[in-house]
Length: 59
Image 1 (tube, rainbow, N blue to C red):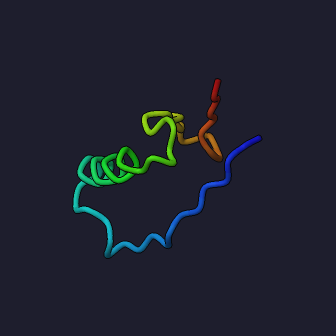
Image 2: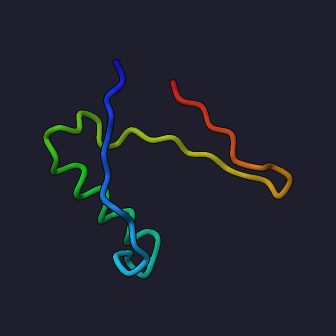
């Protein structure tokens, strides 16, 4: 049932200088892709110094 997404290799030289600019670039590319049904769907997580990795939930 889950759709498999494939991505290209990510290189530091391909990134925008600022995180918000990079997000805007990715969102614009994704929103223009008719195969992506919900380009605004996401999971946001936070991490604490004690956590090995951030917890995340999706609904």
